[in-house]
Image 1 (cartoon, each protein chain N blue to C red):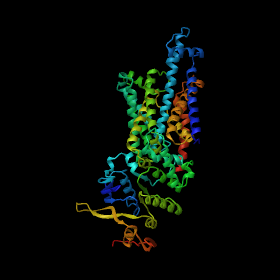
Image 2 (tube, helix red, strand yellow):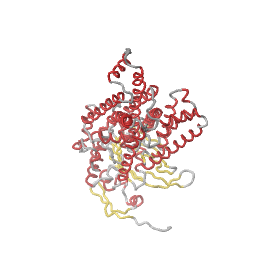
Image 3 (cartoon, chains in turn green, cyan):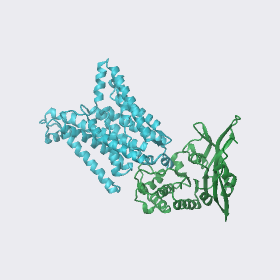
Image 4 (spheres, each protein chain N blue to C red):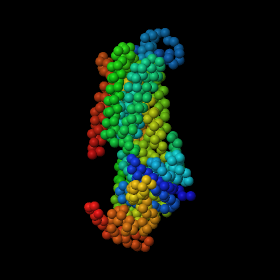
Length: 277
Length: 345
């Protein structure tokens, strides 16, 4: 059974269709990249998969059960989330923040058991923040904060982790470090679904890419409507072709294949024709 | 800031000691001169039901019927306002949130005045707190609906919706007072009630405020982990398994009940709910399992301290309590506003 899937998902906001006809199925142990231009619905799709917002039609299935009939506590044991915004203006210690990942397992007055403490330590070791554990999160750099939130997701012991642009605010070194961390998690059997902007990094780390983009569709009444849906779904090589790059990212690029990885070079914007042609 | 556990415990113990000291001074201090020995005898008599004939009756009633309820009400009203401020600051993720700023206190006042105007207050002593609770709850949910969209709270929208709700509540209260003037008995009750404060409060008031604030505090303790997570943001809270909508609703009900209880007994006393949680958060850090007891003690200390201060130095002038708390709180509020302006811009 797949840990997470969705069928015929449609979501609209203020009566404007945002996402339509999303069908996805995920396998454990994969690093999945969610790509698409700004406003293509990556964050919205992640929030739908987490059950944070409710779709107008279709269903998200978590471990064989509709996500919206499950309790948040039960969902949190299956799905961890690393939100896009990692501004942490309140002065929690690093250890306290990572420990919050154990919330779904503890009652309101229950203290952490030895096992909880071990998992918290392990999460801090894996994310290389153990030396920061007594520091306050307000004093950390962006990259360190990101690792703290990922550590919290690890302490949560969920088999699936969803990440919303986890490397957007990091410098290149921390970007690579974070992606390597996620990759090592997927190699140890977790499923990671990550919204990413950088196509080169996505191509070199992800096992599978899902491209979201705008498309025209017929909503039955004969009137054409536009909405966002899955344009391509497959290996980086299948998804990142010249046509998709030009149509959905407005770029031309050379696609270079080395070993089994691809990368993009000589990226230039597609000249848009102005006027009514 | 004290971050390690020992110093946090030390601060909590100090606060508790201060509560005890202020409580004792509150019982000792007053315009009537009653010796320490007599006070001891009165307590002994009250606790063990013995009779000690050499204590004058008037001394007994001053201690048991005037000073004691006054001190207890001051403690619990202050605690209630500080706790509610703490909860609202957590819910809205904003240090400017508090019962008075968000118009929740004025909503409770409006509810109380409606209860008096319609004559329900004559039927049951619980009518005023019940209506105050409803008024506070409605105001808080409106402010919450207006200011929060998709889990984010805009500071300006939050404060402005508080201002608007406050203005509406105050206007409706004035309207009811104006309408009631044709019936002097009702008008007199409304005017007397709106004066608020701690004067003339009795054990009946204690029995309203004490159970609600104490049980509210205990219920809030159950939410200390959720409050920590709400402080980080809705998505953070949801992702580790907090049912945000249910938690918010329950917190809203608990804090409205507490504001309702304190406003119905002492009236609207501003700024305690703003200043006390903020200072304690600076001192102890953001973890609610420490902040909740700290605010219970801190709010109690502030209100009882303000009352003792007025009684000791301005006993002749009858200055309302709200004047002291506003004199301390309003500059503090402006300071926070300036600080936020720099952070936001």
